[in-house]
Length: 528
Image (cartoon, rainbow, N blue to C red; front, top):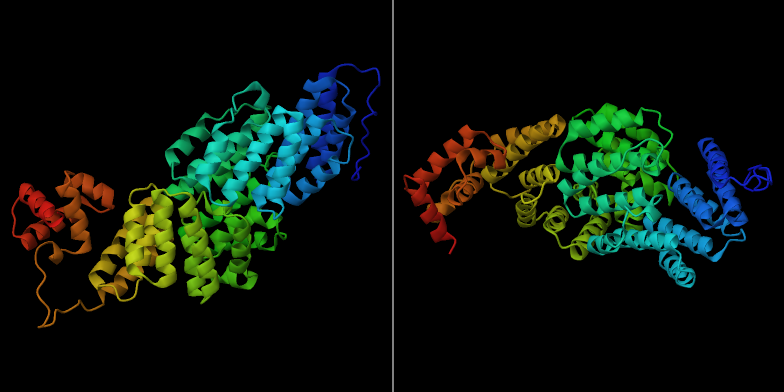
């Protein structure tokens, strides 16, 4: 039985205490898992389920534990163990649950047979009517939607599940985690934060066994919104705790968070030390667990080029875009890396994937990311400007700062516009705790400061009115004309109060006005 000496009959035959027997079986399975024998652990649980000694309730607890063990293993181990478990003489309810578990894992990694497996699981569930298989089938269908970038579809499926139901006790952590992933993908970062704080966290419960997964998702949320020091501190603390409930997926996510933050802080050697060991991780489907870490490393040619990371990541993302969803700036970063490497096919493929998500999930965040990806691929400053406008409406500050720097690096842009974008990017990087990226933006500012200003030719009509304003002045004018105070405008634009005050005086001078009421009228007249 996959190297395990356990047999369902090794416990005393006259033992009728189902609770004690369950504890003995699960303890045996846990010990096997902790010693690296995950397939054997699954076989132990499957054998006891097949024996069906203590009725439906006992069997349900064991199926829940089997699902937890599978969730803590690499996809190859989980799939192999669950497929072996199907060889047991299982009742219809247990058989349908195992089929649903296999289908859910296949859907998560973008397995080519995922659709067929989901159909088979659906047929088995229809015949058995088992509630456990219904939950895992729903999780599988949600996973399939996520792998195809259909966040609204996944949201609709998960909304029908009740993690608070006593019957869903063992599956509640997975339901909550998938819901949080959907919230992150939709750009509902505050909802995701609330969800991670509300999740039960008692020791010894099924929720506590997988609470590390919720912690990892919270770290990804922090990376997405720019709480970088907090994300790194929590990831380092959890990863170094030695907890036995850290699955390979969770470990990979913490590594991705630490590497991402250290790169943004300019600590490249430390980032490489964290990420280099994961570059040798196995082939698909296990490699999908490390895609977020690879997305962090792909910005560094010293790591990505020798390991052929870009090609590997693009291949895995074509199977499933799941890894792109929680951290919005990963998609444009891959396009940026492909363009820098002269890999036009990779740039095109990643852009198409981001556009696919934007089509299936038409929210401001993904529309802006699609604009940014197109702008990078086509070197189109208008698309990058549109991305900046869209990202300003979201909480994805790192993505916004990256887009501003992309604008600043756009060829053919007016130097004053490029310089304003670089300055704002630098200010925003400073605010989110990314001094390394801030230095990059500052260097771009210095380069642009040495660029001669555009001189108006004698044949060119002088700019007047609103057209005479710089992009930075236009942003200030728009906010103040809309009713914001100078302090509010400074906070929203990530600049100082003094900067806004100076720009306002310049706006008044260029427009020939003297007060806020005249600014409102001038702005409204040009926007009609």
